Structures are given as structure tokens and as C-alpha cells.
Image 1 (cartoon, rainbow, N blue to C red):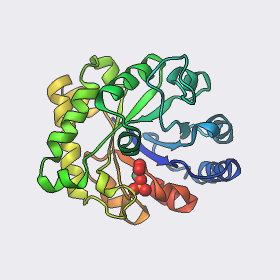
Image 2 (image 1 turned 135 degrees about the vertical axis):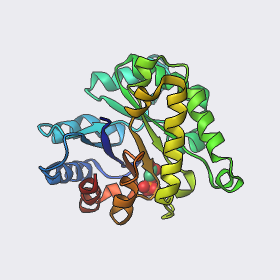
Image 3 (image 1 turned 90 degrees about the horizontal axis):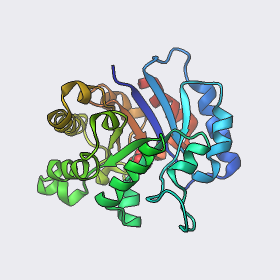
Image 4 (image 1 turned 120 degrees about the vertical axis):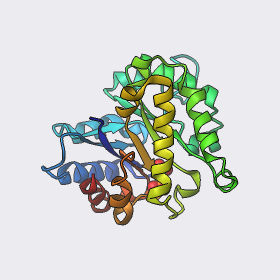
Length: 253
Ligand code: PGA
């Protein structure tokens, strides 16, 4: 049975002290009754990863993840942090290809392919983000675009490595806008992604991949989105910065 993952994406927010306070409040607030199949992730600024990991230690339901990893293993890349360095700090998961990385930092499918390979080589689980901008949705070609993002960056992987991935579908028009995809729009895209994976790697593997929805998910819409059969969790930006709001989403999982 695939996992349900509720992941907070803190982006470039919070001071060190505020980050520890928020992580501690979330750690302590995770209901004891949470399903064994549910996992909570906090994708935090790189600078705070180790101290946050220490603040959530002892609760096996929650872990700290990175928001990015470099496209190189090591060397003269000032300011970058590699997947190997993340692994050496005890980090086990990273976002890759978030739409802000694609649009603001020029990350292409080709770069993401390298990043995915390096993360897997380092033993880090990638949460691979994909999604279409508004004009593509309006043109009706969103499945083509999301399909190509997945094929170009991921379909070179063998089945064993592919099965380690998590996918996050985040329509760009819904990120930080307050506009959410309808539960049916999310379900349709998630089913499309799962079918694409099944065609390439087989149904059994595809059925084991967690596909998260992201884009203005909040306590008030989480239960409807998460009730869809192919929506296996959420990647949550704004609403993950308030412990009570985020914990309400965790309770829907
Ligand atoms: P949002 O961000 O929940 O604020 O829309 C989601 C994301 O960027 O991952």
C-alpha cells in the first residue's frame, strides 16, 4: 500500500528560532492516531536542516527534508549543497524541480534528470515536482506538458530506482494564488500520471508511487482533495507555516 505524505514547503521563510518553534509544535501536535501509512515531511531552508532534524527526533512519523540539491556531486560550486552533503547530515528526502526552481532559477528537465540521478546515488529520495502554467491549462495541453516533464527527467531510470520516487503535481496557477485545482482536476491529472508510469514500468510499480497534490492546499480543502483515489498527500506552502493549520491538514490524511 502506498504512503500518504503530508509535506510542508517552508520556502525561504522563518528565522532559525521560528523554524525550531514551528517544527516542535508540529512534531508535538501530530495525532497519536495517525495511520502507520502516513508520513509528515517538513521541507525547510538548508541552513536549518540539521537543527530541525534534532528538534523532531524521537517521533518516527515526521522528518526534515531539503527543498533542493545541486546538479553536481562536489567541487567548485560556491553556494550550492549536494545530495551527498545532505545525506551526510542525515537528510533522506529532497524536493526537486519545484516550479519556483524551474521559473526563477532556470531548472530544465535536463538539469533535473541529473539532480534526480545524483540524489538517488546519494541515497536521497526525490520528491519530483511537475505542473503546468496557466496558459498551458487554458490551451488544454496540460497532460502533454506534465507527461513530458516526467518522461524527460525520470523515464531513463530503471524500475528499482523509479520506485523510490515521490511525485508532486503542482499546477503553477494554483501555487500561492489561493486558487486550488478542483478535486476532480487533481484526480484526473494524478490518474494520468499514474497511467503514464504504469505504461512504462507496469501497474504494480505505478500503484506503489505516492503522488502528492500541491497548490493552495489548506485545512478547508484538504479533505476533499485527499479523498480522491489517486491523491496520496499534499505539498503545502503557505498553510504549512502555521502549526494549527498544517496539523488540521495532517488530520485529514
Ligand atoms: P502553496 O505552495 O501551498 O502556498 O500554494 C505550494 C508549493 O509551492 O509547494
